[in-house]
Image (cartoon, helix red, strand yellow):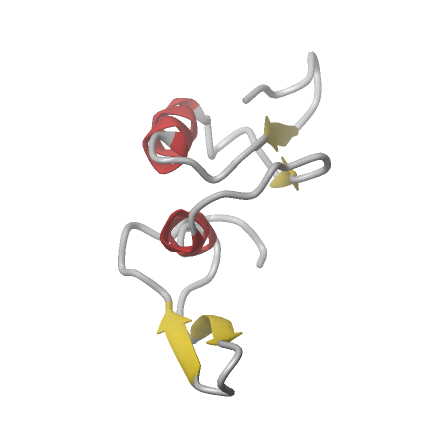
Length: 94
C-alpha cells in the first residue's frame, strides 16, 4: 500500500484472497494516514481469486452493510454472505 509522492489517493494491490490476505490488508490500512488520504484505489487486476470468506472479509472493510455475495450451487440452492463487522473504514466519501 502506498500514497504516491505528493498524492492524496492511497493505492493497494491485492493479488489473491488467501488465508493471510485480510490480515495483511488490515496492517496496511492501519498505516494509512486517513487525514491525508482523499480515497483508496483497490487494484484487483490479475487477482488469482481464493477463498470466498476472505473476499467477504476484504469487502467488509469498505461496505458498511448488506449482502456482499450470493452464491448458487449446481442444484440451484443459493446462499448469501453479508458484511462482517470487522472495522469498516470511515472518513472517506463512499
